[in-house]
Image (cartoon, rainbow, N blue to C red; front, side, top):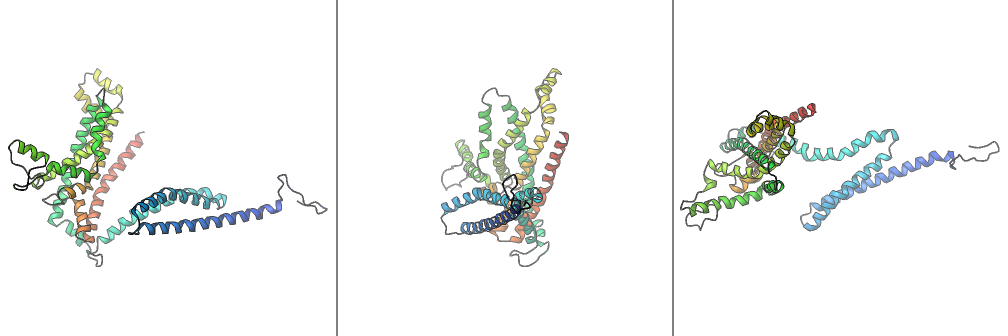
Length: 381
């Protein structure tokens, strides 16, 4: 503000009003330039890091350290830079852009590591073994005509029916019995849940010693089951070569691993049943068995469905147990094992991709069932 005599007058803050707008423009320009430099520097650093991580001659320990640093610190730096860039935008744009910017990296990762591989797998399934020649539905015809593939489909259906049914039933029994313990409930649950801490490969190695069989003349029996049979003056059994019972022996491993998971989830569901309902049933003269079947089971049915569908999805993807125990031989093939075999052992990318697509399509209805179940539960709340 300038008076008639030409003297400059400052406003109440002591700042020349005429210089405020240019200074704000300069600050915005410098902030935007800094943000651009940081973005370029971050992208360059990420490129150098990924190039280093792919170096087969680099020190393995250093690769782990760099991966951890980039994975933890790099994510924080990435979001900090994005926030800095957003702050340089006009005030009206900032709140509208910020949610998309912070969700953006997750969407990009989802597209790169899930959507793109899924679409690419579908495309590869229509080509030959080397992905050079278009063969149409020939690979899908192989899936439904090859003897080994048909056995794998039949075996996988057996796994889907037997393993969840036995594991959920056993877990439900354990959850009910453990819930009645006055002391040592946590200890008992820990023992039953302990196999979940073992990987599928580790569990398979353990059970190989249980099922181990040595033909006559090849040394003493070191397998637990055959050791017991020999101690009882009975002939040892080749458990993993006894088709079709060998499939059941492999399923036992999966049941052993998954029972603890089912028990923990179902135990939480049982504890959520109101005591008033159980007491009312007892007053009406219901026995404990009737309370279990007509009160507890209907009340936790949604939990049972969730545990069962989760286990079905896990079973459909299993290949570790079969691969380690029998390598898919002697009639123990499953769909996931055949997919791995076609991809990495036979080098037939077209057939492997077709099996993967079939497996993906088989899982979709189960996922939709889970989603519909969750929506129904939310609607009742």
